[in-house]
Amino acid sequence: MGKTKHGHTAVFTGMFDPVTLGHVDIIRRGSKLFDRLVVAVGVNPDKAALFSLEERTALMKKVTASLPNVEVYPFEGLAVQFVREQGARVILRGVRGGDLEGELTMALANRALDPEIETIFFVADERFTHISSSLIKQIAALGGEAELRNFVPELVVAPLLAKVRKRKEST
Image (tube, rainbow, N blue to C red):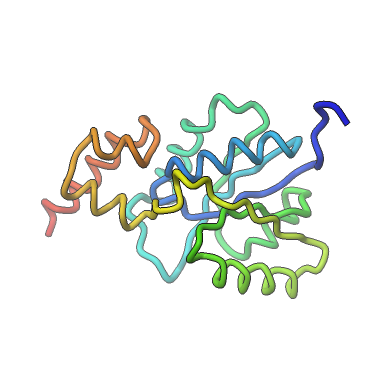
């Protein structure tokens, strides 16, 4: 089969608050399998984000700038609607051990909304299975730059620390 890609366009959805090394790993791996990978930076009405949608989108664009077939867009609303707008039929999701039940529920709901869209799960690399945004925010509040470099891309460290410090000062 050679080095040809296996699919056309996939969409990797998430809040990415903040983008982690685990997210970057999924994006890199997905970019090798699809001709075009769209990273959809979304809004979850049930979660309060540390970074604004615009800030998260800008950070993700910087982090993925070296990947030529990766595009980053903000979105609000249903993931399946955004996926259709991108001309895609695949939602890419990264899964850690404890995520499976919730991810399965979401995949089944998306299939009910649009049976033409498939969800493909990438199992998180073992180096990143413990990383979560809440863990990262806690480390940022208690630790510093050196500790954060184990969990987030270098480009994210300074903005994350600034955001957490600002939040601390306002409380």
